[in-house]
Image 1: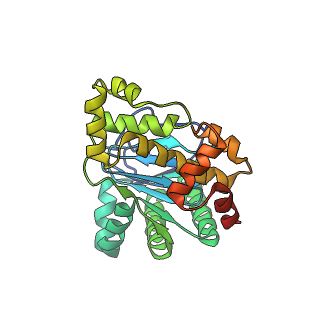
Image 2 (image 1 turned 90 degrees about the vertical axis):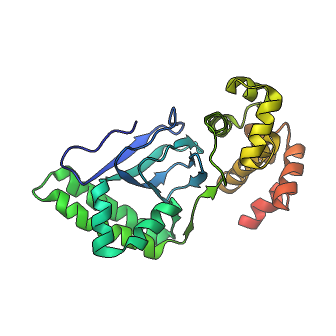
Length: 276
């Protein structure tokens, strides 16, 4: 379980610097507090029973209490972020003083993106909040509450895009574990038979369960995950298509190109050129 907030604190903030491959070892949830994260470095993928979403450097992520979730690394860069924890009673105070719509909208979206200028403002503001928090000055908690009012309003008014992908139905623990394994090991050889055995089911039953809950067969879901990672590598690196194919679980560049065009509508080379 996530570490609880210190007694007597309404708002806490920390700056975390974790290894690039850091992944939550299991599904966890906060029992009482809300969280707000700002990603400085690294890319993350979040899985919940009803949704999944990615967030990238410059994005803000928002997680309510009592929501089981698990995060997975999607980057070779260090995982550096600010993490703000907010006591549950602050929500009611914010909704009464400011606007419940702001709070509900942000925590329904789960992730918000911004332009470069807005990202810089948010990072500087969080740095100021951290300074206040670490100084442990008199009335620091009250000051942080006021600063958080402004931050949440800024995020709401300036968000460019965002939102989580809804599965449409609640996923069973076995399927959640399978999705976590896929996100962590998509570059390796993954088979339906192995995944079914890991879940303790027959291959036929696991196949039906997977498709019933996610709407697509296991093989198609796995290919979609791999293609998403291919897109990220094409956009963020200078690696060749053959190198990316081996890194993302495709047997060679030609096979990757065929699958990529089938789903994206253009070749990997055209996709990379389109981004430049």
